[in-house]
Length: 280
Image (cartoon, rainbow, N blue to C red):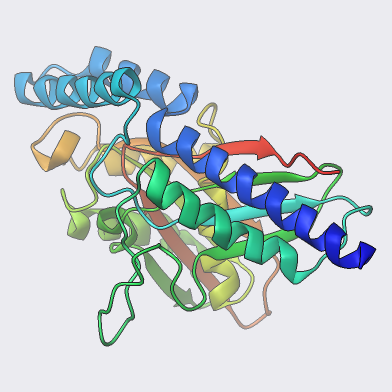
């Protein structure tokens, strides 16, 4: 009986942390994203581009003032959890996440976006089979991070298995992906790129890269950033200097005969939030 009670405590703590993180992420953009949008506005000369960014600023301000989600597409939650050695890794953690998503769907509220892939039947609570995606890793603290992901940007994600000798083609691949995407992902966007690992591992690295705050970029990230902005797609695809707010790359080791490269695109509403799970 004491063990069962402990599992229930973990489940409740994770549920509350999930709901809290989703509420924060859906209503308040991270400071680094706001700063990048303001920098983009300062650099833009096109009246149309500046007007689109002004609409984005109004959207952000209205969400905070009225305590409502930033965008009508509240996305599907992607959850990253770190657990210290003292916390048992049990089903109570993933069940707690699902409880928290159901709670947030009602209370924030979130649009119920999760459907069956073939029948399109809606679960009504953003918790379909295998959803939400939960990634658990060891850490020093019990923390939970949410990355609500809208469909517009997710739908232009890409994966290519290059030959090992084709590292010089990576920047071109990313730029071509963004040229095809145009205004679909609601630019200005943030690009998460995974290089290496396996095909599925590269996709995971690309999404994890979006968890990193915007800031100083590596030379390779800067090269891709410059190339994508040179496309002139601009805010909401209506032309301008700023198509991309930032590029983040994560790398992993890979097979000697393989070079996986994955792209995960994030729209300007780059929602993410981290909270500490209150347990024990």
